[in-house]
Length: 444
Image (cartoon, rainbow, N blue to C red; front, side):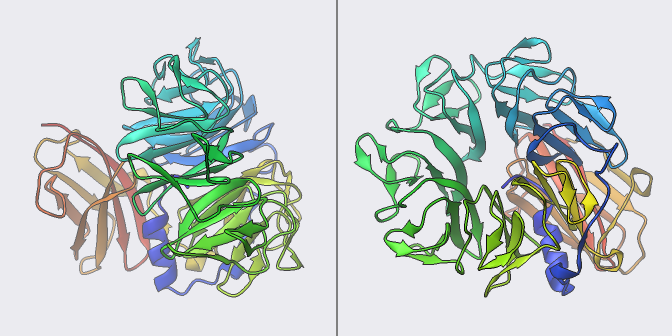
């Protein structure tokens, strides 16, 4: 799950009692406003949607395997990269992408590269084979995939980037790592592997910063998706047993034992995320809990439910974005609506927050800022606005509440300690449904 606006948006959706089933597939990404190849990942960067995958053109604009959408038009990120991009994440204020490429923006970049908003740069000597997943854990970047070295250093299937160099993460895995997720301050990984340094863990393991450990006897087949939901770890993949408990390719871990999540799916799960307070799953499956859902489904607490008529082919990416859910994959139809490789599941206008345009928001100013920064917006006096400041890893730094359409942040955290230099995101959500996010750079 990638950094997005989901926390503030989910709070709005839940508090306003929004019915997910009342949403519908939009036609926003039909021809010509669509990529010409599959979408592998979705992320928000600097307030805009970024898609990655295997394409050369989006919405009529040339864009090599990565593109950004400003809500109206598609734009390339420089010259892009010369191969498929499987994942993207925001790290240290930059967009980092990973996949199967050797060139980013016209310069060598072995399977991983960073975009700073203007140009591409490599991350050291990169990785010696394909990278498929990225995560930030305790301030450092982690990559996983089918590679066996990072920056020339042995690192079987997972490696850590500390901002300067690549290094292995503890002992060596015996097979590929497909999915990573941070849960309860542990780095959880899933994949094809069965052992770490000859210790059996069977497709699922956790790293506490010093040592790897398993989850009981693990799973009986590979893991490909991980997320957190209602305080529990949720695991998806091709397995049918979790620590010997019968499950249907999806299970939840409460810290002690695994439990099934409904009857599950008839085929494997590729992606898990949380949107509007609900667990959502995507993949090549057609059925969930015995009913036809067509590659995407959500959990209502009792059973898996369809999102309309679903998609006509596999789902490989999910992103809560504003009040909507964005979906990427191999499909060309969302329900009966043409939607090539990218689709939006939209709530009715009456349920959706009002996203303000640039002209309706002033600030933040000054930006960059040394002591404080101020935002104001087109709102009404007396309207309650909740303001959340987060860092680039999505961690809450400061929460404020105001009753005027203006807020000043003094660059201090919730403990009243000055924040470190870096990039922060200020999210404003009002009781009338106004919602926007702005980026702040702090310097001292």
